[in-house]
Image (tube, rainbow, N blue to C red; front, side, top):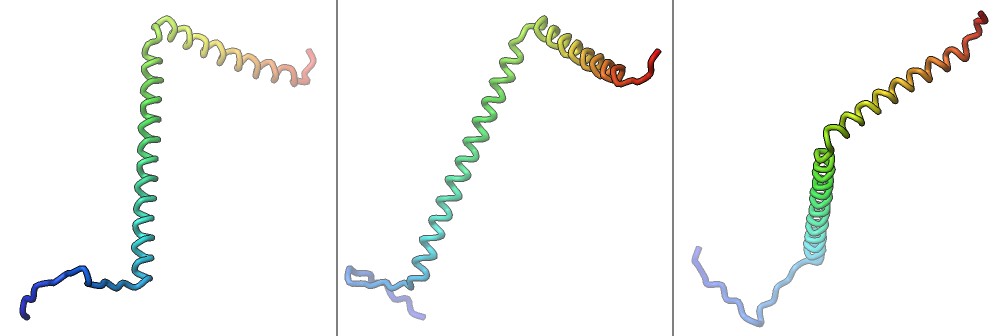
Length: 97
């Protein structure tokens, strides 16, 4: 094999089948679409993470007395629910004393 220099001039013609051109165009389009979808997903995840962190910061800024009051309210609501269930059971009881 002899090494011949590659001569490229303005008159050089390049031929490529249309099937190959269409495949290249579709491949580039699929790559661009995949990149934009990946970027959008990353932006969405980063935004949700920042919102989650902001919510955590707001929660941590609550005073201990506020947190205690919320805990007491939850306990009272659970007691009220238990009492309501008990009352409903007593109302449907057909035993007459």
